[in-house]
Length: 284
Image (cartoon, rainbow, N blue to C red):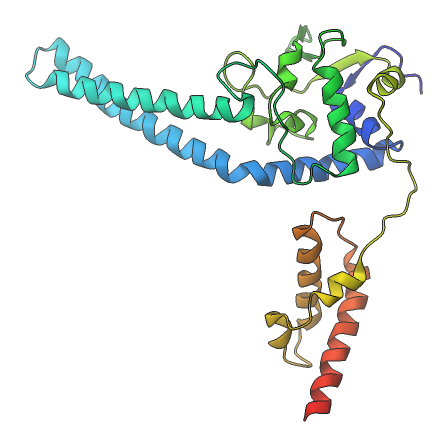
């Protein structure tokens, strides 16, 4: 397929930066954006909680304070001052998120991106794409309005620490983004460019399709030695294998490693349970 100067979703372009196989690249993007989402989720919900609390406090104090002032009722000034303090806190909450995303109130320079594993090869290739998009000389990305009109964005949109959200499959994580100017920006972005030329310019080397994933089964299984959950296993009890599979999956996730399939892990879980049963029988 000839991609020259086609308007492609930024997500598709990013997938080709990650892998020579587009489907594999999209899967990797889903993994990366899921990791980023988990990293910022708690902070983002704390932001919303603080935002709602300060907004509510400002409304129930500032509005009545203005009304009381208009009616020239004694003590109105105190209520207005409290309302203004609450409004100031509301602005501070919003400012804190902008500072977290851009390093300040304005998007003045590229920030270090938030990733679960910045040394991940897929992440490094993705960052090469964002590095190109941060340049003024790169074709500008755009989004489409409901009428289909293009609205171009400048390079500052890719300065934020949460820029990985721009290649998420849906807007769930993009909901966390502030635009360089204004408030939340959740649009899907597109780029009209020659993808091969962009790859060459960024000096990106996508992972080749078909390269088998390697899994460190030895270390994963060794991590279960003397594990409290394994010591508590009742030999022959239903659900033991699933419990061991869960422990192995956790081991991979904690290290930000690709998780083998449940079928693969089940084979090792059976072996672990077999060794546990054999050792306990020898002790009795």
